Length: 68
Image 1 (tube, rainbow, N blue to C red):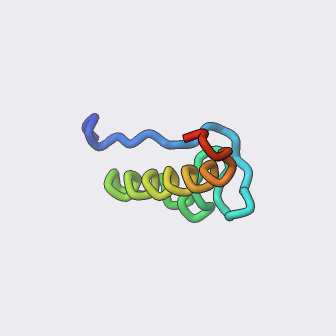
Image 2 (cartoon, rainbow, N blue to C red; image 1 turned 45 degrees about the vertical axis):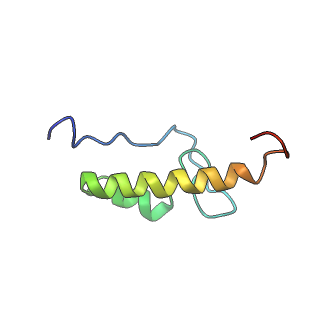
């Protein structure tokens, strides 16, 4: 595996499912977590992108108007 192939896990050890069914710490679904260890680097990047989008949506709902 090269450095380009290594994709760090988004896990921050705050493992609990939110109301949307995704982890409140990293944004991955339980299926994403199970798939992670056998996933290709490209698939891991896809999982991270989807998790990032979930986290962004989740926290955008909690921002006050004008917070950016």
